[in-house]
Image (cartoon, rainbow, N blue to C red; front, top):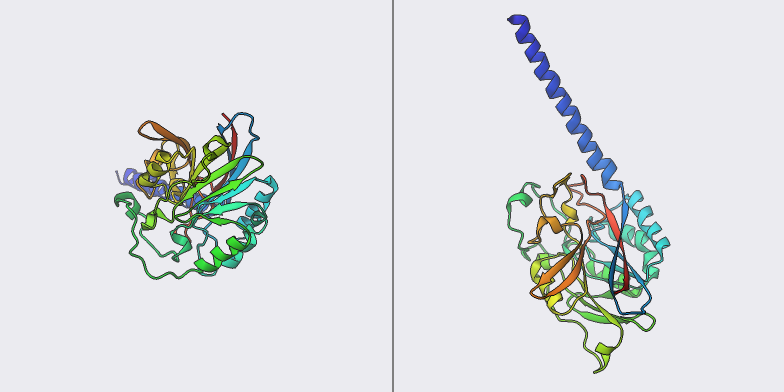
Length: 311
């Protein structure tokens, strides 16, 4: 019996050792490999008028840039080789108080293209440590009860503006692309409660007859914002914030969306309905992570290239 007891103990110890090795391996994969395993997701939506030339939108989000992120910088710079018609940046660009200069270095090639942007909470406030388990149990309604801004928000917005990117924070704007107009409506970060929907641009009496497409832009995809955009006639809505859940269970998906968005919509292209109206909704899984939770599992960092085609 003594020898049998020793065998059980050794077997238990071996199993615990194997479990520990598996856990360390999974953590290494999530924190070193997948976190820097950048990918380009490609989508297409048929929302343009007949005879219109296809347009390509590069959707980037949640860069969370900090110092010494060479792999991320190189990959972002290489995205310019796609030569998009438009870059849409849905916020959370900064991940560190010293992240602005590395961010602008990484985005410099993309800033040569036309673009629009909205901010996220990590464009205003430096990240702080939070218990990751809290996301599983709290009701994410957003909050503006935060410390004073500690990130160079205005400098970043000024640099984007000097490059010609349009700030859509609680604003609308029209842009013309070779006889086709894109009408944008954007909001400041809904997660902080800063969003104020202002509708889509209204222009000449004949503008509805001219070829155009309506696009809503937000950082956090809260349902109130998606409903406003859809009621306003948006054909496409672009958002980020969720990190795709960041840690996903293969075969199941995201456990959280960090908002009131259903978790199955935390990443990817889907159809959003508000009554009888609907819009295409693309939620980016984002490019970076918080410095306090630098892991991804079954949720690679991504940019999204969306081709708009004639219906």
